[in-house]
Amino acid sequence: MYKEYLKLHGAKTTKKHGPRVIKLLYISLIWFLFFQESCTTLKSGTIGPVRIETPLGFCHAGQTETDREYQLLDDLGCEWLRVDYHWNTIERTQGEFDFQSTDQFAQAALQHNKKILAVLCYDAAWMHDDKRKQPYIPPEYYDAFIRYVTATVTRYKDQVSAFEIWNEPNLRFRFWGGSNEEFFELFKRTVNAIKSIDPTIIVTTPGICRGNDKYLQKMFEAGAMEHVDVISFHPYAVTLPGYLKQIEQMQEKAQSFGFKGEYWISEMGYPTGGLYPTRVSEDNLSARTVKTLVYGLAKNIRLITWYHLFDEEKRKKTNSEDFFGLVIRDKEYTYKKGAYAFRAIARNISHSYLMNSKVKCNINGLQYYNFQQDNGNCLLVLWSENRHHKISLSVPSLESLQWSISSSNIKALSGSPLYIEIGKEPVVLTFNNKENAHDNIIIKDIKRKK
Image (cartoon, rainbow, N blue to C red; front, side, top):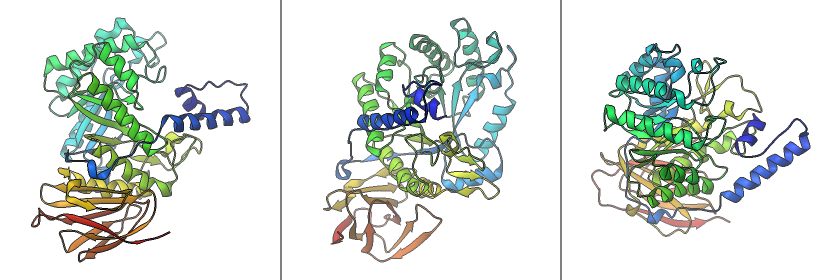
């Protein structure tokens, strides 16, 4: 898996490489990624208002179709499910469509009030001479792919909220083995087929790996973006500035071509093990999760589907793909610390506006994000990257809740102002502002720790 990661990012490995060479390649890759991820920060006071609707979900979730898993998803605040509607599953035998599996999934998801982002993807084994799946569709089978797309979209257009066409085709030979020109042609035909069924169906780009604005530019130049509603991408990064930089690059590139649609992050997450340079410790996952979600939504990302829900009990130590989950799939569905962080944000942020203009703060470097829901409930997230502060926080409510981002603890706070320690780990507070909608939130530094 480590060698595979290096290959995906341009480093070559051979059997001749010993441990020392592999280590050097790994160190070089980390430095390369850090160099790419030059410093980018957000200034809280300049942000907003930003409308937030139903912004958060999970990849590869809901597939047990059990009440137990959906109760878990409800507890975590999940509203979207991103899943593959795989061609090889739906048309396992040429000319015979079998929707039993996707019917069952869609029925369970809708019964539990989840929105579906369905990925139309990959090949069917029967088209290849060796009858094995490959990351490629030869041009002579494009019409067959369109028949699968047409049948699938026609069946689910009133159940699926959006269709994403393919996954990470810019990872050559991992998810797409042909040329860019071949994929763009297939993509254009697919978009046109979907829009001919119903022009109001939401169609996204393929989930583009990292903030690859050069690949997005090629899509625009190839005429592949004409009827696309959403740009979908996966800004995996070693650092938060690198994550922000990828978002900004994608948005700036799209805007340079006059794109007026939305931006979705259909995969984002951090492994807590394995060899990927993006891994974080489980203790640091909570803070990284909160900041990733808040930064993304502050940059007008309308949907983030986290990669992903479950880790299996048995995990291979070197395989980062085994460590992306927020929950261990054991008898208890044990939460990793990052699950509590996701929950604290997801359960309090839907149908809100990011209203930082209501916050009055004179502390340099303090990050603050104030989300106010239509019913007056507020979510306030605070942290400081540079130094610790003890602050007084005046909020328009005499009752507040402080949500732990690393445990199930939710602490009731009373009175205003509140006195809180602020450091690198985000503080997450909720309170109601319905009756005093015009009052400001006031933050003052009352004691600075060295």
